Picture 1: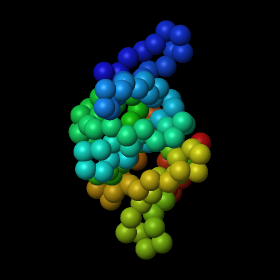
Picture 2: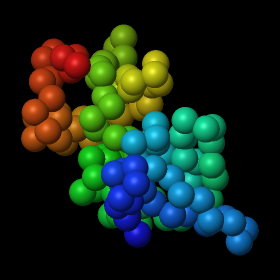
Picture 3: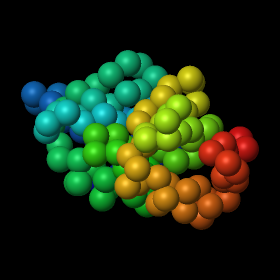
Picture 4: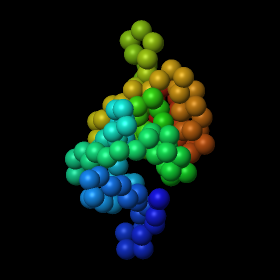
Length: 130
């Protein structure tokens, strides 16, 4: 569940692993990486791992600005600084704040451009103007 807290006025999710619950503030999440059924939440404090299916995570976070840019990555669209194609134009990658780079699949590229447009983030020739 995604909840809103009054003290920090930020949305967060609660995840659990081995009887341990962890509150992850959405603003602190750089991106999610999924390998098998294991989710790696890359956050300011480091990497927190737990079990969840990517489809369930995607459904939970789609109304909070997260986008599944690749089979194994879920990113906050508002943190995208640039989207580039590879040297040969076969693949794409998104540069996020903090010099982080994640892959963008060819099948998700067009939808990502639409998401950026919906959020009012300019997308010109592969570069967002942020």
